[in-house]
Image (cartoon, rainbow, N blue to C red; front, side):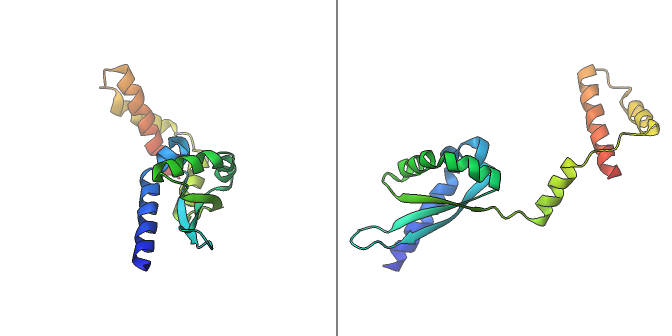
Length: 149
């Protein structure tokens, strides 16, 4: 008996993860994820009631709250029946490494010194295509600015 419940739960979770971008949309799928399925036995019903916890940041949780009915409808289309009855949003746990990356991305970058500009221009002087030269210059500038921080 418990084997059936566990296998059903993990199959559901696997399908949710696999089809997550289709369910919530590609624009939101990378900022939230299904965190947990909760099964609650309801008296006089054949199947347990299932609720889904979605881990999301506070702004994304607000956005998803307005899409809650659509998300439920899409999930139940995938499983072919009214499988998930409720959705709950839980805080997304962000690792310290992710916080540092975000903080570094928001930090203003120092402009290159005249010497660095000169060295970069000397490296790129033999590049003939102006489009490629411009892109390489932006890449070089970005790399040099990253080294300064």
